[in-house]
Structure formats: structure tokens, C-alpha cells
Amino acid sequence: MLYMMIGSPFVPFSYLSFSFHMIHMSILFFIIPPMMLLGIPYELYITIQRVPVIQVIAKMITPLRALIAFSILFLLYHIPMFLMILSEYAYGQRLFIIVLFVLSFRMWWPIASPNRHKRLDHQQMKQYALISGLFIMPACLFFIASGWFGRVPNPFFSQLTTHLCIPSNGYIPPLLPPPFNTKYDQIMAGVFMLGLHKVALAVTYRLGIKSLS
Image 1 (cartoon, rainbow, N blue to C red):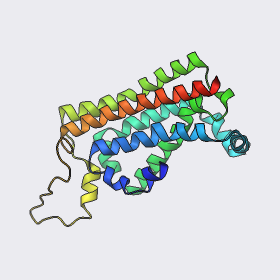
Image 2 (image 1 turned 90 degrees about the vertical axis):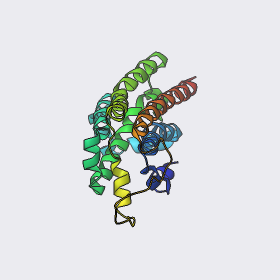
Image 3 (image 1 turned 180 degrees about the vertical axis):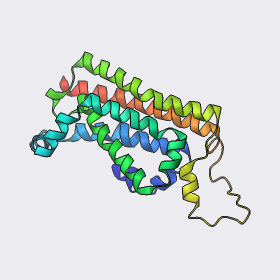
Image 4 (image 1 turned 60 degrees about the vertical axis):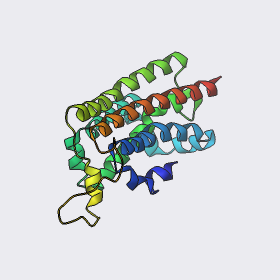
């Protein structure tokens, strides 16, 4: 699944619309990290946590700090103007995604830690899931509002078409049917993100509780 999100043909395909791109981002940040954490063998976890650099990072970046930092950066990523500027710098965009990806692992730690004793209990998991949802929601709602009140051109689509042969009149025929690449595309992108985050929280919560029993 990780390969599909970072190295498969799905990556350039996700640039064709906001919806596909945000589904791509949601899987990368909300589904892959908790599944990978839950799948790490305990022996490997013990080996990794003994690395001095990992210990320092773990002390500096607590799960709550990671959640706050991720939420702020995630919100910035969904501000159309910031997204358009970021799309102009390929290396900057990749670095931004890597930072979000690393933070997402620490963010999911209290629910999906490889060490079951490091996870929150049943009630605390519920509270943390609620806080996580509240922190992520502004980015999704902002994206929905941006699409509703004023359509913003897809910067990734524009970047992709720079490598294509465009007619002299500058007209680019739609590559996807409606409602993609319309204002409804942004609204759907926000809804998909919100929904996938809720699903990821519910599934990870159930798997975490199941492993504790």
C-alpha cells in the first residue's frame, strides 16, 4: 500500500483532481501509519527504541505535540494559495509531505503503538480520537468552504499539464468527467478526507482495543 501511495502510477493520476489527491493524502497519513505501527513486531520495536536518536526524538516530539504540529501543517496544505506556491517547488513539496508523514506516525502512537503497554486505555483512546478528529476537522472544513465559495484551479493539474503538448489556443480538454475539476471536486475532497480520517480512527481504535484484550 505504501508503494502505491509513493511510487506507483496512482501518484500522478491523483494530481488530476483535488478529490483523488486528497484521498491519496488521507491514505498516506491516516491509514498507512497506524497499520504499519500495529504490524511492527515487538522485538523489532525494542531494537528501534534503543537507538539514541530515536529516544531523543521521542522525548522532544510527544504525541500531542505531533498532533498539533501535524494539524497546523495539514491546515496550511489545504489553503489554496499556499498549495499553489508549494506546487511550484517539487523538492519543497516532497519535504513537506515527508515531515507530515513522520509526524503522522507519532500522532497515531497512543492508539497504535507496537508496545501495547504504551497505548492509552479504552476511555483515553476515545478521548484522544475525539481530540484528533477536532484537530483535523478545520483543514477539511476549510477546503470544503474554499470549494463552495470560490473555486480554485488545481495547481497539481496545472503542473502536470506543463509536460503535455497543449494546443496553441491554450485550451485543455477535461481529462475527467464532472464533478471532477469543478467546485464540487474541492467539496468532495474535503468530505473524503473527513470520512477517511473517521474510518481510520474507528478501525485503529477497534484493532488497538482488540489487541489489549
